[in-house]
Amino acid sequence: MKTERKFPFAVITKKQELRVKDGHPWIYADEITDCSEEIENGSIVDVFGQKHNYLGSGFYSEKSLIRIRLLGRNANDSYDDAFFERRVGYALKYRKDVMKEDFNACRLIHGESDGLPGLTVDKYEDILVAECASFGMETKKDVIYRALKDQLSEYGINIRGLYERNEGELRKKEGLEQYKGWYEPFGVPESPEVEITENGLKYLVDVENGQKTGFFLDQKYNRLAVRKMAEGKRVLDCCTHTGSFAMNAAMGGALSVTASDISESALEQAKANAELNGLNIDFIQADVFELLPKLREEHQKYDFIILDPPAFTKSRKTFHNARNGYRSINAMAMKLLERGSYLATCSCSHFMPAEEFKSMLKDAAGDAGVSLKIVEERHASPDHPEMIGIPETDYLKFFLVQIN
Image (cartoon, rainbow, N blue to C red; front, side, top):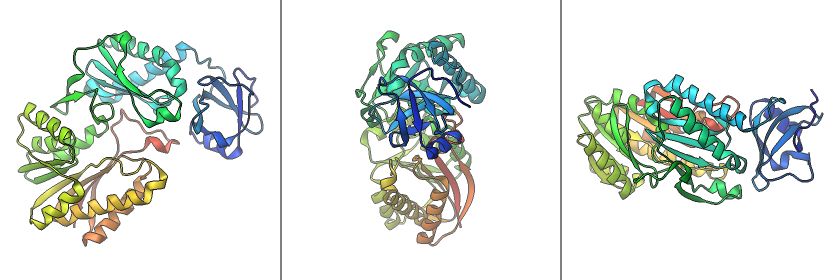
């Protein structure tokens, strides 16, 4: 269907057109065959196929390899302030529907999954934390932040501050300044630390200095899977970060819990969280690649090991090295476990698809001389929704397996 142009235009290749029709909102610079002579950075452009059929409209970024991020495919949309306010409303309504009592600490906006490409907003009680990685979204952030505050107040939630974690490398690729700090129109709270409750456990979240936006909300229900399995077991939680898996294991009635991390500051935070909840956990500062062989040499015994390392790969170029890294630590963990014991293992990189991760586990099991029985295969909690057609939104893999 031919559509009159409302904005500057871009024409894309047949290959990219098929990708867009499959649901993907990104259009790369080398897939654009023709466009308006002058397009303002961050402005809206109409996208057309080779036969001049309208495909959608989106933000134009003159410096990014992702040259256009589609916002919608309805030719009648105007992309005014009301459009973005509606998108915020849809995102909040979805979270209220799927998170129920867990709405107190959850992701409110998950970028492309909520039709707000490049924008992440997490809620920790009455504090919001945002990260913007799109030039176009940067031009609309004031509208979106105000809509969030106003619409949350309609749910009886009064936001007292919004902290921007705009430090990521993606901002540099978009030609945006890298910084972090309070969004001053909402005021400046006295402290960047806020206490949240998740699965009945209390956590101190540092929105200024914590990883990402301060806390990994996407593992919320995977932590419950660990709690359910931990009763009566000797548990080792590797790469514990804030101690969340370890504390859920302790809450589940584990016989003993040991938590390790290479970061001294992470361990201090994990210890504070354990103390806040009155839980008895032993802590070890160590590199997981050195710790696991050492524990085996010492003939330490565990019934349940949790591996939740940082992403080993953030690009396709490093995929094979990352796969070897995952294979190595999983094989080490399997060698520490007796038959009938359990392993929970994760990857948070979308460059490691679930089937490839499962294949890696098979290879690691071969290295360890064991076989694996899948108890559960899980993904991110539903406040981090996966969109069909956008594989990048399916990034978190969580496998709970039994060693046989």
